[in-house]
Length: 163
Ligand SMILES: CC(C)(COP(=O)(O)OP(=O)(O)OC[C@H]1O[C@@H](n2cnc3c(N)ncnc32)[C@H](O)[C@@H]1OP(=O)(O)O)[C@@H](O)C(=O)NCCC(=O)NCCS
Image (cartoon, rainbow, N blue to C red; front, side):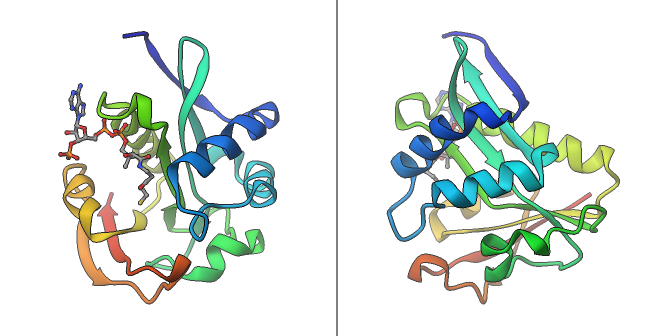
């Protein structure tokens, strides 16, 4: 297994990231290429990629906000990003199927949590489906119940990691 390098995103990563998003999420939930481009431009400091043998195989990203939970407009409108907000959100954590179950998402998440800590955030917040609740609990996230989000027509749980 090649070495995994976690680094901040670059503008040139856009195409590959958009491809990974389409592979990892159903069409109703996948962020568009335009939306990913906007995220890279708006909060590159909280947009990380994982490289294996110099190829991008996964990424994590999200904006900062003063909201204690994720709400749908956060995903769609980057003007909701508050650079010194109390919460660091996770919009997406993706690892290409052929590279899953090797701890790559865990490396991305741990690095992301470290950034939140360094930036003195109060918490990291995300929403996830039922099947991933146990996965995020492993990092110390607590399940705060069903989210008001109807993103992609699915049911989501609010997860909070207090720093
Ligand atoms: C969810 C997702 C990001 C996880 O990525 P990943 O890199 O496979 O995650 P990890 O390797 O850290 O952990 C995944 C599982 O592999 C296990 N694992 C970690 N390292 C392992 C290793 N070396 N060998 C075997 N299993 C391992 C973990 O314990 C975990 O098991 P669990 O599901 O029973 O808890 C990935 O499956 C994905 O992109 N899915 C589609 C998009 C998605 O749903 N994203 C989350 C949005 S909320």
